[in-house]
Image (tube, rainbow, N blue to C red; front, top):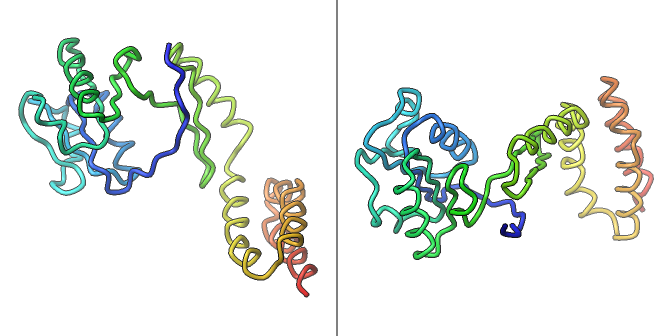
Length: 212
């Protein structure tokens, strides 16, 4: 089994090839579009919900069977068909062109795998079992969703708001004091208790106390 290197990738305006037009392809396309990718789907048929995603700009459908030439414009490749021979060809072609490729439910044909992801605002936690058990990865993700709820969206938004000011107005040693105070647990507890105004006040008071 490969030892996969975990990485977060900026997909904004990145050309991505999806081979296949079924329900699995639909899920992949929706996630890719959500993250800003430019998706090109190659398949002789699409399920109706996937057809609804086609807009000719961010999501394009090429109504045909896959061929090796389809790889060339893509920077990232997903093969989502139920036909073993097609998946194998896509994998071979992508690797020959040095394109990262994911073949759904077939780790041996992948050069990367897609983790199970939980999101709360800017918080993203990716869980992987290295392809051993996607079900276990989803179970771990569900546990994390119970640990880190919607309060993380407000919490990280608040910290992001102060990050620029702290970097601009506080020297490094005071910046460290500020961040230790802002993240020592009180602010997140206040947000969990629906006391957002008080949470904001704690951060602001700490910041102002450190100004020269």
